[in-house]
Length: 93
Image (cartoon, rainbow, N blue to C red; front, side, top):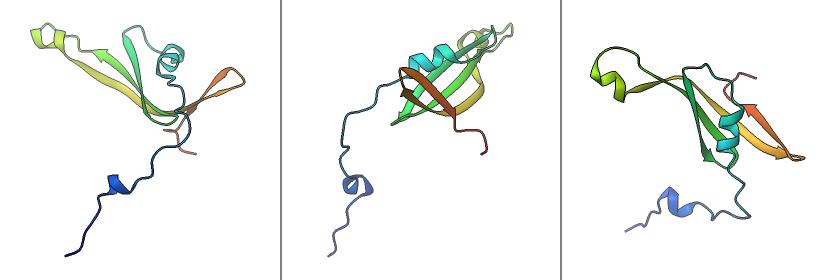
């Protein structure tokens, strides 16, 4: 009988220090409309996903508990000479 390993087991262990999480700093720098709320999460390493959330506006009770994403982008954020450099990975190159 042959033994198989899962892809998770074969991954090498991470090396070196984990980079600082810039999620909150990115949220503060993003442009937004008055009715939008920006949320940013670190996906891995120096890559992030930012979502622009907006609450649904209607008179029904469900709208008070729901929101939708108006815009979503992927970013790379690095610190260069004490300055946060943000690169939009969602734009075609």
